[in-house]
Image (tube, rainbow, N blue to C red; front, side, top):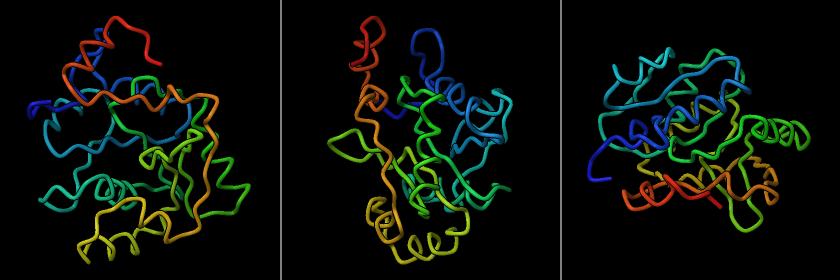
Length: 179
């Protein structure tokens, strides 16, 4: 996105992050926004804004760790800001599957591949995640699979995972139905 903050880019007259917040409002009791820049802009949405605990870009696991440590809940639920089709009514599948399988974490699976940033995780794993990141590791799927991981089936809604990564995609999807 040419260095622009993706979550604040306008998509159909709303910032991309607004779609994630709408979905989370239907599912989560407490919402935190993880942002490492433009924190005042994100604070305007009315939720606490937390940054990664490190100054280097450590990827989505660093945001998860910050959320786990800031949350005062048993679980942390994460969704990306660049998937405007996210549906709060469907996010509950992650939690239900986690409970059904008595897992530590649950991520979404669209029938072909996992989508690890659509995740619910026990906050008690924060210490283990901190150690993983401190060791120099960053690969999300590797860390997830080192624990009891459940997969929630979203093969009936693969459109939820269409994400916007480029200006061209943003422009294309402004007036097209995402499928």
